Length: 191
Image (tube, rainbow, N blue to C red; front, side):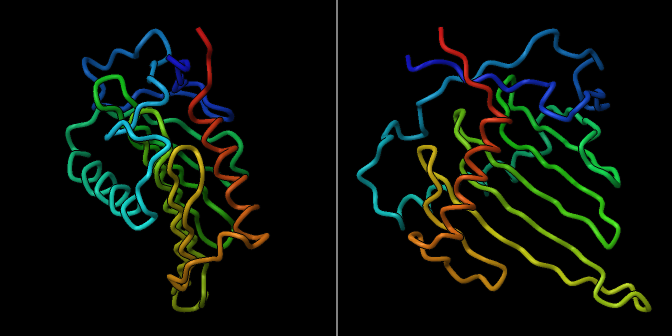
């Protein structure tokens, strides 16, 4: 086994507060172990096409959201959010499957959803809402979608739902950012 991924309750900048949906309202006493390296179809690295990988990621996204009500929930305030914020972690048994971070800003908020399958970050949905018109309270909403497979970003759909070229400097910078963020969420540990 290549090692274990540890989903820690004490993520960087987070302090746990146990959600009412946690069984018996009793917090777990240890980090949650997630096996690294396995994928839903055990083909990492894969000979699948980008289109097939993206379809598999979309199926994971849909499945996690369909099952969301059955997951155990852990809520944590974000200490590193200047105007406040909260993270909500969703667990299927002891496996982290989704993490939602909400950051409040002076002009709106940012919601980042992380989707995890078998210990691998698969998808990031990043929604930024800024006040467009202070008088009416209308928001300007920007949604970015980041697809990851085997620890690498394979596609980015920007706010206009246009694919950002994978060889562009901007794509490479964002790929590095999300890969670094994944390491914060899923801590590596070798046996």
